[in-house]
Length: 466
Image (cartoon, rainbow, N blue to C red; front, side, top):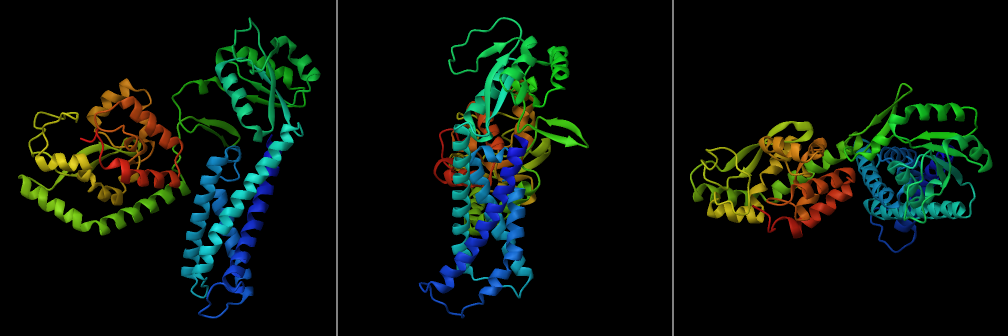
């Protein structure tokens, strides 16, 4: 599979650069040569735009690489691949704008850029879809498909077989499995068949023309694993080991990397590292600044209303836990009397009577949360992410919900996937964590934009807001 994937990576890279160059030239033709669009500043020389590809193609190549569009896992899911492609092109356009800003002699037609982006994005999406279909059709005819023999019939082995069946793009087919002991009953008629016991391994490798062996035995059977590896050491095939620790639902974004030749399994890893973290931070700062500027009159009105409605400060500062367990003071418009928590922290419920009249109105419409855009500018929060909780309650929740602290692998947010789906306030904590972790594991800038858009219709007013 490695050689197959490497060939696809090189082919896709060449196709991407070729189509980007064609889209750039096509945009020039549509803008200046077709005759449908007015030309007010004269027709710029084509040679200038052609030469600019020397800067554009490296920028596009770096962005596509940075967003993982040539990594094997990206090649297996068209949906995620499309999202990453949109993000990569958006970042590329931003980098191109920065490049042209610092080199004042280079000035591109803005209308040409507007034409180029959808042309390029559409061409790249169509090309990848077509390439995927061509390769899958070849595999469906059996051309180039690798035959895989599973050793073991554990839950992890079954999941491995199911994912291979669901992803014909990888060019693998599980022909069956072997193990000692009795064969368990199975209602799945499409599951790979049992072909024998461990002692039959060498014979089956030869008789069944096996290309790859995937070992999916539990760690307590390490002796058997070692014996199997010794048996296969003289065979010309690929051997994989699927650790049974992946059966536990306590990891997130698991991956394997090499540390000076030593394979290391990362079980809990944030998706927001490298360029992803930079892109999200830039988006947060720009969005927060724009929001604070546009809605500054609303902030002023709410501040005056809070001050006139009851004695005390305008803002309420409360300790919350954010990224990697770091604590910070989250800002809110004060919605309760100043002495509301003199007896200690209280979990908010729909029946909470401590809020003032104005406070209840602000809570129902989530207007009390607006000062948190200042937390975003400080770098303590993000526009989108899991809602931050108070440390005193987290100590209780993490004992009750094993995966609770995984939500702290990214910054807390003003709005989030759980909130727009109704899991906020006095609602199921388990469901809230489930939605928070789904967001983290599937993060993208487009996902953030979707959540912000849905917040306009679902997030500000909800029955569980309190």
